[in-house]
Image (cartoon, rainbow, N blue to C red; front, side, top):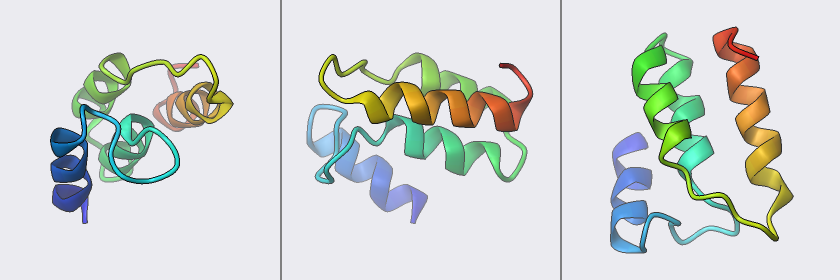
Length: 69
């Protein structure tokens, strides 16, 4: 599933085809199997959507899971 989401993001300028930016979703998926380095990189490369409050909320959620809030 992660590979499909990354491929979607790559094909659509880093955003993916869903309603929200996929950067934070990718970071969350990488954090869960304890890959904090990959998760942090995904968070750092997620484009901040000025009109999408879910990006900041999801980033906070993932950082909480990583213990870096």
